[in-house]
Amino acid sequence: MNDGPFHTKISGSTAIVTFNRPNSANSLSTALLSELDSLLSTLITNDVLKTLIFTGAGNVFLSGANIRELRSLDSDSARDFSLAGQRLFQKIVDAPQLTIAAINGYCMGGGLDFALACDIRLASSTAVFAHPGAKLGIITGWGGTQRLPRIIGKARALEFFVTARRLTSEEAFAFGLVTGIFDPVVDEAVALASRR
Image (cartoon, rainbow, N blue to C red; front, side, top):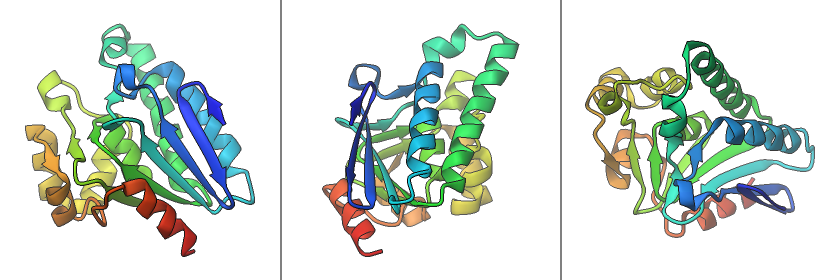
């Protein structure tokens, strides 16, 4: 299925969802969150599927919230946007399938929150991780502040959030943020799914 901003390929019991908005660095807009929510609702209720793999086109996994759109939100619409992301990412956490983030490139802000909601995170050697909100005067509202400390520890997570520094795939592996580094990363995710 090639539906809008996603390419979805189903092979046997595995679905591969590729974020395909390279012109906007795979940013997560309000409209995209809604479309992704609909897609996930379809996939997680498919009893044949045992594994969901998420990756990005080009050199970006997900770049997070659309900053231009964020600037236009008032307090009510910002709250709605935050809650929509929280509900969506919790849907990933609660999915009956194994969820794998095959992080092929930049994984920033809300994109990292998305990856944190997955059961397993694999990285390519060129993957880059960051929560740049501190440089913009904002902090993620999609669950990353809760999930990241559970995965890499409170002190490292706090430093990561307040400095907005970028991690290489090697650093992410050393911190336990990802479980391995593979090229091509999607192939490893598919191989992992086939071993289930």
